[in-house]
Amino acid sequence: MQSRQHLPPTGDSAYLVQNVIEMAKKVTNNDFPVVTTERRAGDSPVLVADSMKLKQKLGWKPRYDDLEYIIRTAGEWERKQQAAR
Image 1 (tube, rainbow, N blue to C red):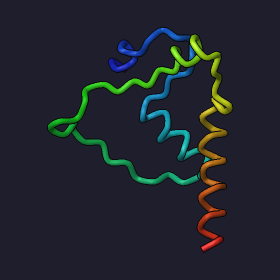
Image 2 (image 1 turned 90 degrees about the vertical axis):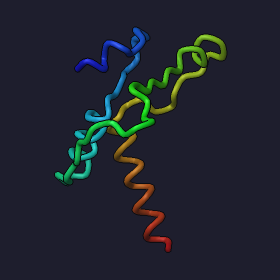
Image 3 (image 1 turned 120 degrees about the vertical axis):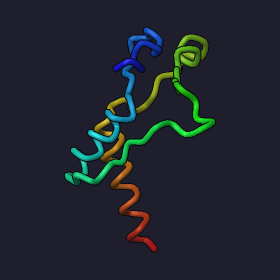
Image 4 (image 1 turned 30 degrees about the vertical axis):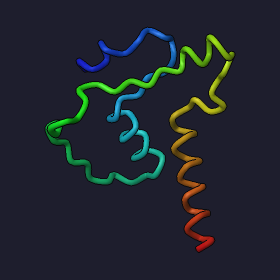
């Protein structure tokens, strides 16, 4: 994908929106519909979040860095919140 050329070579995992969608479908076992459209006026052509400075300057490390685990536990948390209502 063309967008990968804009990602910094940090050695960390980089996830495209499509990666997150595919993993969410896998984790939830739900092949939900996805509508892909053109970028809207004012949308940024590229968005990159890079935690390298936090790691270098503060020695910070994410507690969770596995996308499958993050999506699964987020879903579990959401189900618990809904059940408590």
